Amino acid sequence: VLRRYESNRTTARAHRAFSGHEVVLVLSAKTRRGLVSLAINLRQHLSSHPEQIEEVAYTLQVGRAELSYRLSIVAMDSADGLNKLTRFIESEAALSDADFSTGANELNHVSIFTGHIKGSKTEKMSNEALPELLTLDNANRVAERFVKGVKFNWNLLYGGARPNRVVLPGYPFEQQRY
Image 1 (cartoon, rainbow, N blue to C red):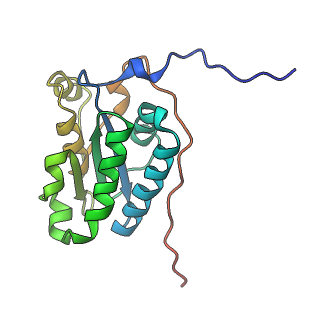
Image 2 (cartoon, helix red, strand yellow; image 1 turned 180 degrees about the vertical axis):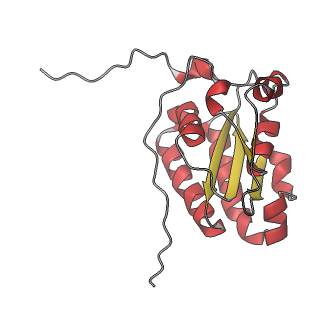
């Protein structure tokens, strides 16, 4: 007799890292075009699985490599995340390389942050500094620091009660022949 697997873990809704109930969606890619493709794929996934916003955020934070072109979105729920992903996709082409790289653009005002890390310009946030940042309860600061190259131990956001990881669309490799 086969039965559906039922997890013993509690649902991720109890695991929101910020008291304002925001989630931080983080994406990174080797190129801007790759980042846009990732955003499109994530938007399709979230539209099909809106109940998974917390699990998606956690999987993106801990289950993906951090590459040089970065996007972070602070969302209250799936609908907010979908709207912000759409806004990024539609406005990305209009951003100059300088505006994209520095994150100095109009998207910041709606909790959408972009950045391009050149070389090995990343800095690791100490395990002691992250809880201090979180006590300020500012998901926007965490998102902004991610796109500027700060490496977080994302598991500290959740303590011992972490959301489940979920299967997400893979990395969109460039379609170039050599």
